[in-house]
Length: 134
Image 1 (cartoon, rainbow, N blue to C red):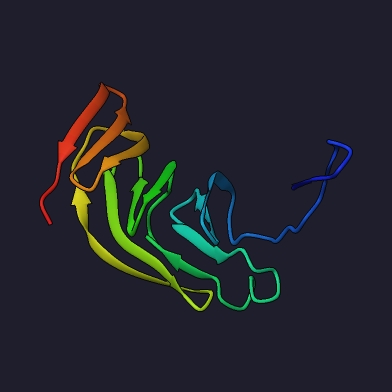
Image 2 (image 1 turned 30 degrees about the vertical axis):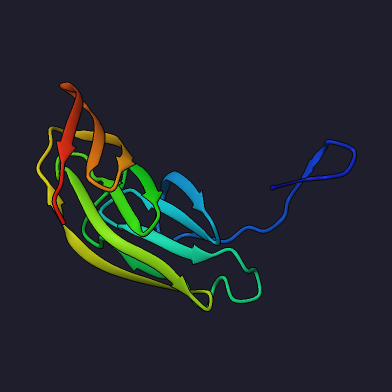
């Protein structure tokens, strides 16, 4: 969606996903789409000329309920499976992602990275705060 000069909105670009989108998050030059039914997270560059060609999927086998990225740290809230952590950056419109690990939380609905060491997770049991060391 883009905002026009007259403050109305129009379709900028759209694309199909390999499953039902649960959540969408945009950061810098990437769109992150959390998918249900254990289809993971689809990462797409925002440059529409290469968007579909350079898409990648991470967290295959997980349903992604919430997404947050800060600098190169990417956190995915994955329901009963807790939170998955990745390093993520873009190299010439190609997403480069590497798994760091997993946080065992209660059922994770959403996640927010507070800083490089502190992560907040919205769970069935309330807010859980985790400190990570890297």
